[in-house]
Amino acid sequence: MKVIEIRQSLQKLILGEVLWDDEILKFYSVDASMYQIFPKVVVIPKIEKDVISVIKFANKNKISVTARGAGTGLVGSALNDGIIIDMKNFDSIKIQKNYVKIGVGITKGSLDKELKTKRKFFPPNPSIGPYCSLGGIIANNASGSRTLKYGSAIDNVKEITFVDGRGEKNILPNNQKIGKRIIQFAKKIDINQFPRVSKNSCGYRLDSIKSLRDTHKILVGAEGTLGIILSVKLSLREVPFKRILFVVEYPSVTSAAKNCIKIKNSGPSALEFVDRSTLRNIDFKFGKSTECLLFVEYDSNIKEIQTRFKNFISGKIIKKLTTEKEIEKWWKYRDLALSYSMKEIKEEERNPHIIEDATVPLEKLGKLFLIIDKINKEFQTKTVMYGHAGNGNIHVRIISNRQKIKTLEKISKTYFDQIIELGGTITGEHGDGIARSEFIKKQYGNKNYRVFKELKQFFDPNKILNPGKITSSKTSFKRLERF
Ligand SMILES: Cc1cc2nc3c(=O)[nH]c(=O)nc-3n(C[C@H](O)[C@H](O)[C@H](O)COP(=O)(O)OP(=O)(O)OC[C@H]3O[C@@H](n4cnc5c(N)ncnc54)[C@H](O)[C@@H]3O)c2cc1C
Image 1: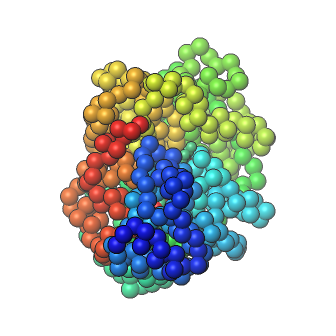
Image 2: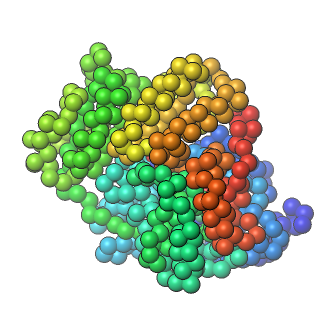
Image 3: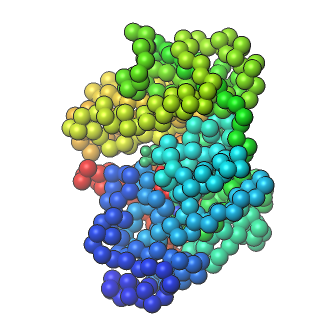
């Protein structure tokens, strides 16, 4: 079918908008990653039936369909060359006692605002803040600073309504027929090849499916490759009445990493890390030998923690904050670590973020820092690091004169091999997208990879949903040449 025929047929088929101006296609050809792929057409459905009609049409004509939230993903997972389906009109919100039912197009900012009026919150809080959509958060299994206590998206979703690759609308976990098939796939995996970490956005999370009640979780982190999500029931938590935030300085990243284990055992709601590059942006006189900070927050047992905290800290406590205003001010320093790091790196020293999101078991965090140290020595690079230390999830950005694509590939392979050896995951929150799908077989082994392919076949027999992601061995490095 000719491109113009696809566009015109879609226009006749749905109530929503069908767009293909050059400027529109250019806008949807990029997200927050380093990749660019031009779609043939962009569809903005108005009603559920539009989504079903688009998928049925795409299925019949073998054209790809890729869902788009706010386009803030860091690994190119919302980019593709067929139909892009922007879910922004699906922005309903209905708050119940312990859950909220939302349309996937709603932004995190709008959801937070509504929930705040009821003193509730949905725990995953990506540092991008209010801008990303709930569809993207769920499809990436996103998380954030409070994941340590409250889990990632996968731990906070109760029900998912979606349209599969055949154009069938389903609700999980309600649909037991589909649920039983998912359980069969879950039983086939070799669990020993799954990472032993507290958060993981790599591949399909069959490890999280223990019973028929969990089957909706297969859509979480699936990056729109198994279905287009329409609406979701999310678990809610009560906003804690009081919080306390300690900021602790350390003379080395390895001493901070070692201390994390003891701190984690004390039950913090957040345990976050920033290196020297963020320090320079904070209005405070740090010790001369300070190399990094840990931000440690508690939202329960505050009184007891106030007296006990110093007993399990090996660094120097530089701040003990108890007012919301001060706590928020200092959290901003942590949340802005990515933009501080960009400020630090000269234009000519910026490299694509290729290894920015690995996660290891907490007791291996020190080893992760040692691996980075070795990479820096071997490839004559420097790095900026920050992240969710309590989960063993560190964001790494490479600084050096612009590296050759081949060298970047070598760095990724060296790093990922060792992360997998430590029992870690190559992505703790940003997902696979274009950047990491080629490494999934290495992460999970041949047997699990085959199960992933069978699962994909079950949900999307004609492979029209976001092809090239997760079950794909296409190399991403060639695509970086435009960077
Ligand atoms: C500055 C910055 C900071 C970040 N910090 C964090 C962080 O702290 N923690 C973290 O976890 N992540 C972080 N991220 C990445 C984060 O995961 C994404 O930004 C966010 O979750 C994606 O939401 P989005 O609406 O922009 O999705 P998009 O980028 O539009 O899409 C992401 C994926 O979701 C799929 N998708 C979207 N909607 C649907 C749907 N309805 N059905 C099926 N699939 C769908 C897309 O196809 C794509 O595969 C950060 C990103 C940036 C730019």
